[in-house]
Length: 372
Image 1: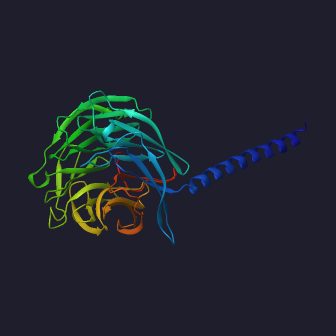
Image 2 (image 1 turned 30 degrees about the vertical axis):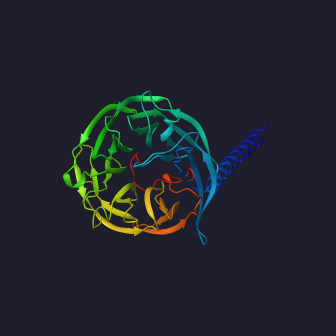
Image 3 (image 1 turned 60 degrees about the vertical axis):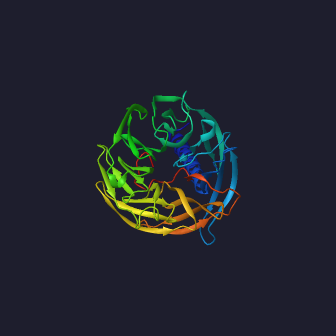
């Protein structure tokens, strides 16, 4: 073949390969853009736990439509807990309190399926909180805190045996983790170089104005935010050196208000589920303190809540008139909330745990740490 002809042939072939690559990339991007935002919660049924999957529709007619009801293969029954259901990218986990197991959740397109069943370590029972961080699944329960390689589910790192059966939530930051106990304490958790539990557990000294019923927890990098819900200072942040900075909450304090559950929002904002106040109470902090901002009403008693990876949406579960509901709020650039959509009742009196699953291409926008 003459050199000129060969050159033209190679150029045409290179262009064809490039065009095919661009087409494939375009199809993949189109596939991701077609995937919707899903909101997941669990029924916490002590007889047969189920995960409910709602698809969020925005625009002129916003709605939350129930699209799947998935038996987890285990039993629920947890109470006084937070973070029993989590999603990270296309994988998630939900704890089965009454079955001493964790069910893997797998997103495929716009649908969720239940994957493998992960058993707890010997002697560990009643899991009521999970966290996904890096390549680790963390599980807190009545007797143990444990880490599992993720997504294989194989036990990894040390099993930390707990003497306090009131563990409420496990949360993981960049270099350390934490467990809250509703009996009145917070413990700092050590991590290995690969992110599993190292086995160390150290108490965080809580001030008297911020030590009553610690419950929800979340990380902003290596700063822990948690809610001593029944205290006058009903929100607090903790640094990696276990120094606590308490923050006064909405007034009057408990029993009129009690921020209990926590989600890290965009920038310096934190959102809390305020059950007796029937509101989402918002706080702003830096690394050494903060301030209560305001409460946004919820038409019922809110519990757990979460913020989407891109920082655009907040989802909360609440109960009203013996029915459980899921509500989604839009988050603006200042962190303020606007109601977007609410689910219809499905005959479940209350839900436990809430997670948002977005298209895989969604960008992180909430400035959270690994434990968000």
